[in-house]
Amino acid sequence: MCSDIICTGPRSKIGEVDFRREESRQTAFMLVTADYLAQISAADYLDKLPRLYREFEESFAFNKVPLEERPYQNLRELLEKTAGFWYGYVLPVLDDKVGKVYRYLAAPGQANTYMEAVEANLVELKRRLETNEI
Image (cartoon, rainbow, N blue to C red; front, side):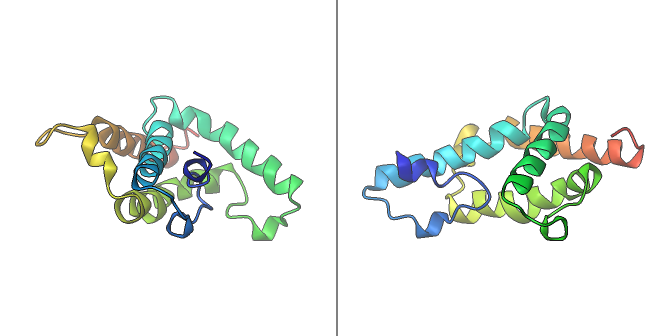
């Protein structure tokens, strides 16, 4: 189970984890998928982003990460980079690193409501950014 948990999070190196059994590897893939999709597809995800930003800031400060080395300088920049995080990092992880297990969250030929909810959140985030509602 420890190997499953260390696979979650954007700094994890899933490909470097030594799983003792195939079942453990598959469980880790499902856990990683659930972790990302549960967060980013949630109806209140956009409302949670300011709190998430504060958590990141607290972590950066605790770890003494200089401002210029942080991935974003302010909340707006985090929000502007959220779609890029999904398309440039999370989706490739789900597709290439954890075996596309999200495809099992919908019956064949049916829409995946989690993936649709992520897309809807990103569309709404873009709208809010364009209208300065953030």
